[in-house]
Image (cartoon, rainbow, N blue to C red):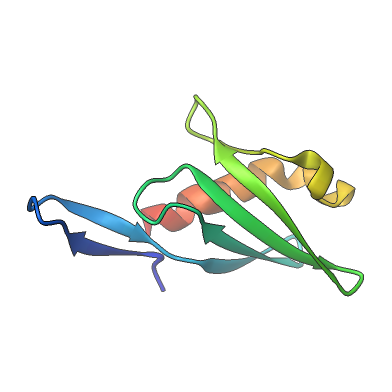
Length: 95
């Protein structure tokens, strides 16, 4: 299922509504929650590790990719997945 649906604004512009989605990366399931449903700028990302649900943020950088904004909240073993997480967001938006 695509994470965006076309919606019409009162000013007749059409934009995309970004929705929550789940994706498995390297055998780990991540949940992506947009913080702004109309503009790609920030996602809360959830991941379970050792029966604990961790939350960290990914924000868009000047080059258009997403970076982990708060690495201290991301389990260390997932920091290396930053590029894959970014690509996942960008690929889901294109669907």
